[in-house]
Image (cartoon, rainbow, N blue to C red):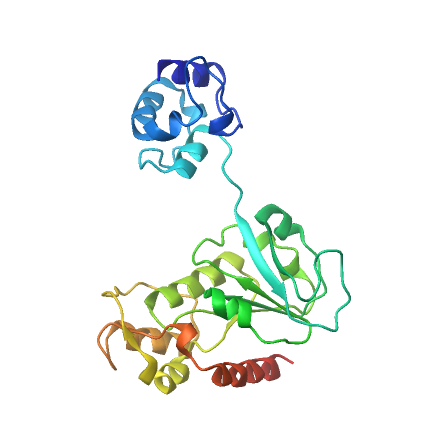
Length: 261
């Protein structure tokens, strides 16, 4: 531990992976197995300029520890599919491909698309129907802080459409996406009061859902969110997006595309 701390005092924020740190007698997993203890030592020994205080390194979280003390983390990755079989191929990015690349590369990606869908369920992502000038992204929940810089989103005439679960978390993700990508406009799919009421027979029970101040919802979305939080239809209601019949999804897609044409 002292060797590790001495190294960071001499080489603050080293910008290397933890496992590439080569110190005598220390195996490559040593730091990962002692994150909490090392954090306490480093916080006491390092100058403020060497510590990112907005990142917690005391939760035995490797990514948080790496960010706090200036190590590299595994890059975030984005998974997407192109949905228009009439579009010409572009290297590996062909119409049939299920593609996953690091986030930095995705943010710089340029492709002629008009509709970009984000969905949270993997099978829905894989089964998403063919649509002209379209692509679908596997969302994986919260975390859109860097998406505002996405080159795809800033191409002229592009529409961003989010489809999540009809529950509190789904609306919180939608709200965060809108805030993080502003001033871009984000539309939703099957996430309003009409969708909630028409799909009530598909509801399951969720954990207790606490109300939050969501400022970026439309009137229909806000109504559905309030209905869920206030348990106006069923207690702790949740309608998972993968439970909605495919035909109903296709109808909703047609309506959204018609409204955006």
